[in-house]
Length: 137
Image (cartoon, rainbow, N blue to C red; front, side, top):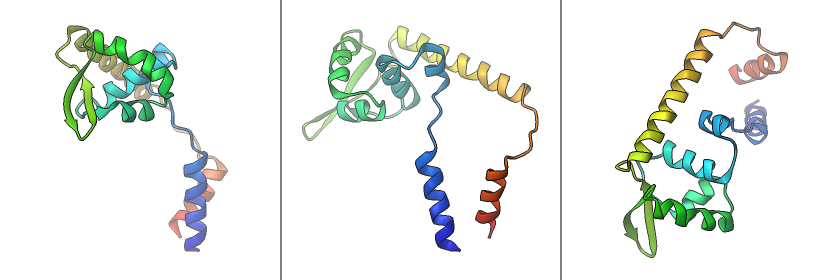
């Protein structure tokens, strides 16, 4: 029975698609928006260029075309160097970035309010109730 649970959980994890963020839904699923979304979401931490590209799901060549513009406009800032890797994070001191953060927060709040105010209870699907039974055993 334990193996069955593992198979079901593995299936669910491999077939589930990550929902796009509200930021991506509003501004479109473009490489620049994905990079900005990643930097906004994880603005407390610094990352190498490779990590930013990978976690944003942006190809390296596309990322290399975008990066100089972000750097020149001071949207990102160099924080430190670890070995050969330079680490960067969102420049929260930049007025444009501050406005972007406020906009992202407002959009997220608006969409969250819509979700909780208009949500109606629905019956669970047969598949999900079967999965829940398996997981409870």
